[in-house]
Image (cartoon, rainbow over all chains, first blue to last red; front, side, top):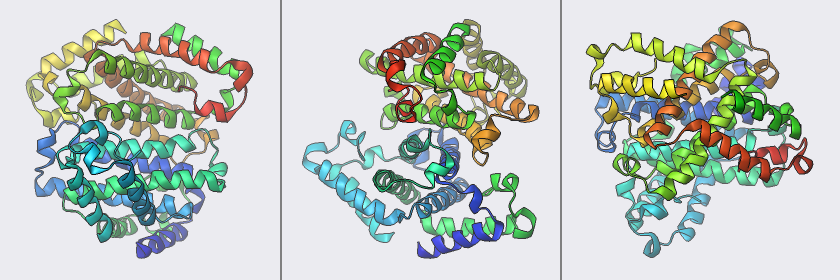
Length: 114
Length: 114
Length: 114
Length: 114
């Protein structure tokens, strides 16, 4: 992750793109990249998305790469480590959704992360 | 990252939520979390999003944590490491956008990741 | 539609919100509202979303109202009628996807609108 | 709007695409189309999006057409008129945000539709 953060800073600096990388703009770019993942899945059944062929996985891997790139860049502009943020948020979710209360319920699953 | 992946697997297994975690569903959850980041920024100027107060950053940190959680979980369901995917995609972007051709251009920046 | 456009202009003017309603900001607000629709559907099966109970439909009706509000407002700021734009785009799609070539194919359906 | 609804039903029926048009899938398609609008605006300043050249407006007009198409189709699958839903939601918003309380405040504007 530190390597990625560092390389993204260099990438933006070398191209003088820092000026475009406000958190507002980066959040939009992040949304655009996530939509490219959705586009692959929109007409497939859930079952089909659990059994993708390797060519499709390869394409989605690139989109996931782009999502991670923008998420990391956005977080870096705000002084946040996305991994630390995720681990801490997971701890909050863990306490919010005790297994014995939410087991197998899609209803609670809906609030997986609230 | 490996720690996060492992903890997310346990988290889903303990709650019997694996059944809901198809790539299709996880991509939707990812989009929902990204929109919560956008919601904080939608009426702010770019300048304001570059100078957020600590209370706002704290809230956005939680949203970014959620985005990283779903991105990691989605990638894991497809056998993908999001960090490796990002580093490889960055290499592709690097060759696609040579600094001397795109420097300071928002036009090229638009296609930052294509 | 004309009534909606007119009421939205008044609504913004009365609150002095015109200053926040740049196309950029409105596109973000539109994405946020669409995500609220997604949130209702993310853990449901396709079948379940075809058979929602009336209470759920009522909630989604409000989200759809918000999506139509921001779409109309965004279009109005650009001098576009969303209904005319839709009818014209449908004509383009009709010629792009002749029934005898794409019948029953999710593959073509993926590009429904390209 | 009634003409659009009717034409969209015919369009789907002629192509046997009804099977793909679950509310869940249509909400994903809607999100994908909205992201195509965002993509045009992501690196532009707010000011630039208020002063787009005609060629750009023409492109965005097509994206807005697609958003209206999927929104209408989604609403129709749920027995909802998007225009009626918008007019009713606007009435709710009107009472929620009295002009004298929220005038010129981006803070309240943030909750334009809650």
